Length: 442
Image (cartoon, rainbow, N blue to C red; front, side):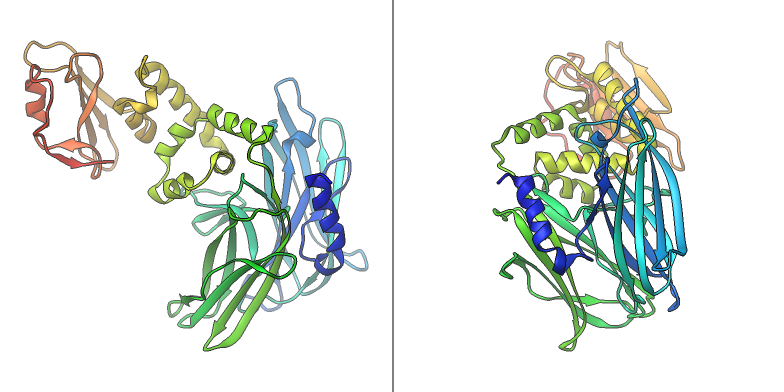
């Protein structure tokens, strides 16, 4: 039995137990998956229902420019057919054999029995798919539902992404299916309400279909500061050691002084793919075609640490998710990569590996450049100025006379900077500078 057939069989066998918890898969000409979670909006009479959709871009037809366009319609109806909430929007993207679209709709709902419907229509050929699931919505109380996620990252200031929660962008795993080795971590997002000043303990356990734990850690303390109305908690579960595909269940439990306050179970499918297959090789090739080296330079230290722990498939997924949350910035990033390569790259080093290329990628084009390429008493040098709230400066010098400009000074804390950088410009015949003291290192 093939991997996809095995997963389908597992979904059918477990449908009776997990029908309202596993992702709902669409019927019709377009295949996609939906999941949902309920959050508090501060009122016992109503809640916020988040509806997540995940669809491969290969499901759509593309125009002559390689673009796809589709409409998503979300509705929430009671058992009598009355509509409580409704939303519709269009999505456009560049078609990719490995890309997917992830969306989130937010509907205000009231406790009760409801039917959630999501219809996705290809705007080029009219093909459509519909996914439905029955929901039994209850007040959020002190705990929201647990949202399963593929990636959680910090957002840029001013972001209006629909996946935004506070200062984080949460990419939901709407299919509740994870693939190894492409995905080595499962992430969760959870909100706690009106528990300020409380000392809780949280335990997370991942078990297989037989109920045998395959991942777990001791209960960890959770201290919620006094006066906090909403506490947002994120967590990660390592699934890299799982070797068998199948149905798994994530159990999350909060206790206080030994008493259980909240317990939730989230079923999921974990698919294990042989890392030696052609697909893995194609993934590694795809990673090389992306600007991952340059991408690593623009990440925060926290994001960089997370990124470096991922394998090739995981890095590719993180890269795509990052730019999906910032589509307006991707074109500029690629332009900067191309410029750095053409302007500063050479026979032995790519543009991003040079000091000037690295600074250009991180800080952008300088507002002004003071260049001194010819001198009998000084090494050729460039001074880059960035005019913002505070003037930032970089100095690069061709110390060896071979056209390779090395960064010797910066006014930015943590950047490469030598205290005697002005003397270095004068010592054009000394060759090496082993006695110089470095003040900072990026």
